[in-house]
Amino acid sequence: MSIVNQIVKIAGVAVLAGCLVTGTAFAGHDGDEITVAYFLDWPTANQVAQIDKTYDKEMGVTVNWRAFGNGNEMSQAMASGNVQIAYSQGIVPFIVAVSQGLDLKIVGIATSYLESDNCVVSKASGITKANARQLEGKKIGTPIGNVTHYKLMRMFDHLGVDAAKVDLVQMNPPEVAMAFARGDIVMGCAWAGSLLRMLEVGSPLMTAAEQEAIGIRVFDVISVTGDFVAEHPDLVQTFIDVTDRANAAYAADKKAALPKIAKAAGLDLPTAEKLIAMASFPSKAEQASPAWLGGTVQTFIKNVADFLVAQKQMDKTLDSYDAVMTTTFVKE
Image (cartoon, rainbow, N blue to C red; front, side, top):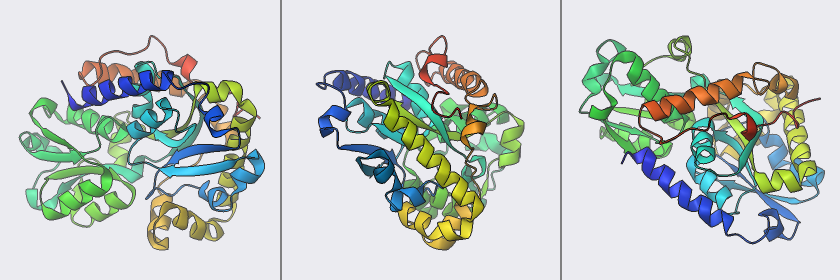
């Protein structure tokens, strides 16, 4: 069984556990608080509203922000009823979860970030995209079962590397960066600050532009549990609206927003500034357009799911992913 399939199996258990929770997840908080999953070391424009408690004020509830190491952990927490909203959940963990029956729905696009998520090869190894097959038999650290892993598999496929012959080790980004620095792995895949640390002594296997040229796209979503979106659409709408206004405020005055963003992300100011410059935050209007939730995302998700099944990294796909996303909350 592949590591991804092991993760899928665990997620399936979490889905079952989530079904056994009495009432809705939100009801478990007596209606006065919710929990939102997010990532540390990951600066996003909405974090000014997080620090200023704008979400709490506008939604009329206490918003607890809980940090996770990867998107699969977010899915499991949502299945258990401990989290109602995941901000910036990776698209692959979302696909894995809903393909296994977890009731989640995409209500918005959090960020697009092709340049701030990548795989870095040790310069000392002498391995480049030209001789990438030398990675076979080598140890590579990566978060498994998320978009970073998906990108890695697509690059292997493009460069003729036999993924079955590569020793992939499950690590979250900080662990990847430490293992890379020690020389324990010849290549590491990560994002944000961990990626920047690896780039100090390594080089990308493929650049963002080269990945884009072969059809790789990287974005995170705002996902919500099915119960919560059905029973509290007003809170979901307010969450999306506050996020949209925070994104617009950041675009209008990035310098003023950066200190609070860095604080929420747990980063120093220069690092936060460098990382967030690699990302974009589409407006509600852009998210509702055909370029995103208006059509392209549905097709992209199905293509990713089919690819994962073809690579034997997932057992099955849904016939269509149209039902697991909506433009309701991003339409003006």
